[in-house]
Structure formats: structure tokens, C-alpha cells
Length: 432
Image 1 (cartoon, rainbow, N blue to C red):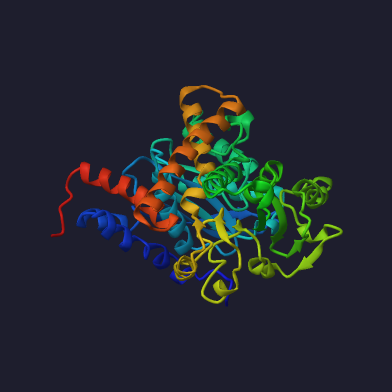
Image 2 (cartoon, one colour):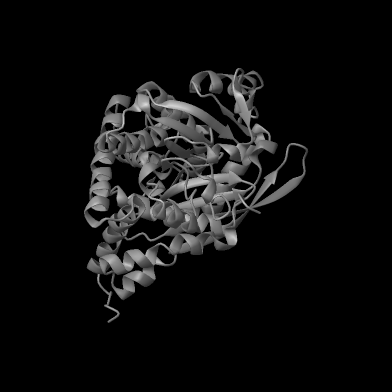
């Protein structure tokens, strides 16, 4: 069905972008083969004792994709549509994005097929701890470092970190990132993905001669990354005219302020001590209500995709009227749609660059945990800005120099770094 994720083709679609990169940067035969498959893919069963005494068993996965540059790094998502195909694809993108911004990591991703919003808080904690017990043998600060993703947050990562400590019979804070600051989490981590995406947008806009106050945004999604991006973009002067979530979209030509929308969404959550927010952006007043997917066809300067994979695809790419696309979600544009946008000269600031703020600050959390230091939030944010602006400039300049899309430039930058490391380790022969 159009608009839904097609997991059967997700990984093949993601890998299809590799061949152009291999040819462009002359990747050797052995390195090509190693980059086409994950190092490890584990499927587990997570039994959970429910509050009513019954037992339910949830399928889960953890995938490690190419550890040449360092231990696997990537989030854990709880979602009813999780599959091994999706987790493998996400781990591949993580390997690329870590290399794009020059982090000493490979790609990792995990997930449990569950609707966490149907679980009580205690059931969610049992699920989180059970998942860690299931994958603990392949985890660790030097092997695989999980982090938050869709429907996981600092609370969930705190439970997971505590469970790993129990299994390790000691304190291992660097084994998991995205933890609450009281448990060794880094200040600035919660807003890092949105803040990083804004850095990328700001750099591109500046090079294009665009002023924030003259630039309109439509944002698909209003989760953690999207909200913090929207909040910070609004403060910078960008005019946000539309936002959406899973239940619908709202529009205002005069612009929307993110904070009041989030305040209304979370009021019910706080009152009832819920882990997740059930309310929608559609409860906002004095705005025009739209169908969820109508947001994708609005005439705006920047379409910000911050929901899930495969949101712009062959059935709706022709409806996209934005002047440019910013990807905060992982893989929101299929390879076919990407080609169509490129042919129309619609620039796409790709996920493997634009949403790296989260993993960059996760890296800083890992560094702090290993050194026993605690950095001020201002220092974390400054380090994020410095790294991301430098690596983004390399991508944008490469795209201009080689006359290619930003996505191709980012992939070439990342894959080049991984392939060089593979070849320098030896046992890699040219296919010719």
C-alpha cells in the first residue's frame, strides 16, 4: 500500500545506492563484498510477564553492520512494524553515517516488534530489561553500543543500562548511550538530532543565500527529533507553516509555534503519568486541519521529513512541490523518488548527514563515560557544531566540485573511509 514501509525491498533499495559509489571511488572487490552484508544479525525472543499474569513473547533483533572503523553503534526501536529487514537496513545506514562524520564506529541497530503504547510502564520495563538480557553477549563498550530510537527514550535506556550493569556485575556506563544524565547520560543528547539537522540546514541555506525569516518549512513528524528541530528552527527565525504526526497535520500560513503545540500534546501524558503521548498535533486551535499526507504536497521552501522510512516514493514523489528536502528520519525517500527529485533539481539534504547529531553526541557520551568526565551542555553543543559543520562542508563542497547530489557526495565520503580502512587491514584483493 502506498505510504507504508515495504520491508521486503527496504534493504535492497538501500544497497542499490552502493554500486554508483563503488564505481565512482574505485572500491576494490573484497571491500565491495564486505560492505554488502552485515557482520552479524541476531534474532531473539523476549518473554514478558504481563500485569495480568499472562506471558507474551516478542520477537526482537540486533544487527551489526561492518565494524572496521570501530564497535557497532545504533539505536533500539520498539514498534509494531519492526522486522529483521528494517533493522538490517537501519544498521547499514548507521555504518554509513558514522563514517560520514568521521566517528570511530560501525553500524548497529536493534528493535522489538511490539506496540509499546499498549504496555503499562512496568510491562515496558520488563520488555526493556528482557531485550538486554537477550543480546547481552554481543554488547559492550568495545563491541556494540545501543542507543534510543523510535519509542525508546532516556527512561528506557536507563532501564537497559541498569540491566547490563547487573549482568556485568559492575558499572559499565559506556555500554549504552542516551541514558538520563543522572545515570551518566550526556547533557544535550535529547535535542542533539534536531540541533544537528538545523546546523546542516543553516550551512546549506547560508551557501544558497537564504535567510531563515524568508524560508518556510513543513515538517512531517513531531517526535523528539522533529520537535527539537522545530523549536530551534523557530528560534532561528524559520517560518514553520505545517507539522504532522501519525493522526493528521495542521497548517497556518502565518506560521506555527512548536512549544504551545507540544505543551498541548503532552499535558494529558503528564497528568496520567504515561510513558508515551497519545494526543495529536491536531488538537491545536486556530489552524487549518489537513490529512496527514497532504503536508507532503505543500508549496514550501523546505520539506522536512522526520517520521519513518519510505514516506516519499514512486506513488507520491510527483506531488512534492517543496524547493528542497531535509531528511531527519532514516531513509524517508526511496531510491526511485530520490532519482526523480534529482532530475527535477530538488536538492535533498540526506539522512546520513542531516540526522547525525544524535550519534555524534552519543559518541561524546561514550567518551565521557570512558574517561569519567562530565561536560557542560554548552561544551557538548559547541563540539557538535564544530564537527558537524566541518564534515557537512566537506560533503557540500564535494557535491559542487564533482557535480553530484548531496546524497552521492555523503555516501562517497562515508564509503571511502570505510573501504580505505578495510583495505588497510589487509586480505583485500582487487577484483581485476
